[in-house]
Length: 371
Image (cartoon, rainbow, N blue to C red; front, top):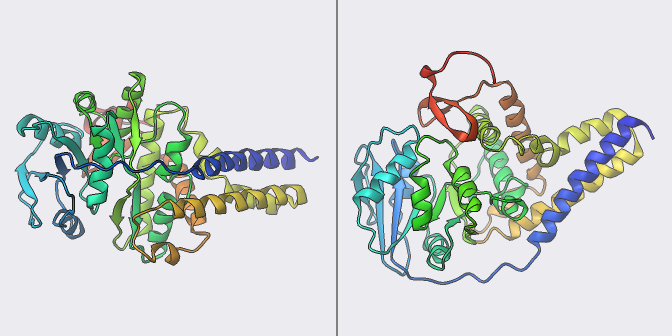
């Protein structure tokens, strides 16, 4: 067999096996969702909310237990729906963590479960309950799957396809995580231990990844919330989407450099293998790539089925192969991260990245390339 065919076929089999294992794990019956009415303190850190975020912050939340909804911001936003405002203007590099730490120092917890949810998430009672129940039951941290909804154009479909239909869905990442669980900081439930660990992460980007890593090192549990963190999409554009996921790739390289090469190897192999198959013209390689396409399409279908709480019709508007758009976006972001210096622009500020996700204002760093 031609060495190029053998290498391509081996890659296709490896990626297909990775997808098959994820599919098998996702086919298991989900655990029953625990019900709870524990009192909750919901914190929403935000600096300059957009109109869509203001709508999210003002949504009424149908949680049956006691809920205090507090928006943390340096300026008083326009709010309704029972949300309160707490002035917060932290000086920490990670302003989100700074907002949360200030709230934990300022507000009385009174035994309430603390939830931290980004302003771009449309919070529902199911999400509050899904995040609070595991923490009330003893989990150190709970996290929800970010689920884009309301996609309109091709860019939105690519973002939604990536986060809802590919291995980069946090539902798939969670079942495939070896060691510390994959965590998305868009919607978290914090135990007292997690809040204590968060205090040491005010100079980290990707504080969610580092928090999960530290909790795992102490033998503590991270639970996945069955209710999704719904993120209504606006009209997106390719440069913004590419910049967002390029930053994610840079953060991954900083936090977990051993996992960084798995992005093209296991998470985005389909497009390179399709091109490889066309160039080589081997029936064996074509069969291997076809098998990969079938398995990944089945995985995409299963992830959509598990997206409980998504508004009716959302799944139908996405084509069956929109996961291919998602993979293309992630592959482009990975390639972009290879040529970017270890700097990120985040929440309007530019930082230099260091090992373990630490960051510092970029102006304190000498200019130069990667290293």
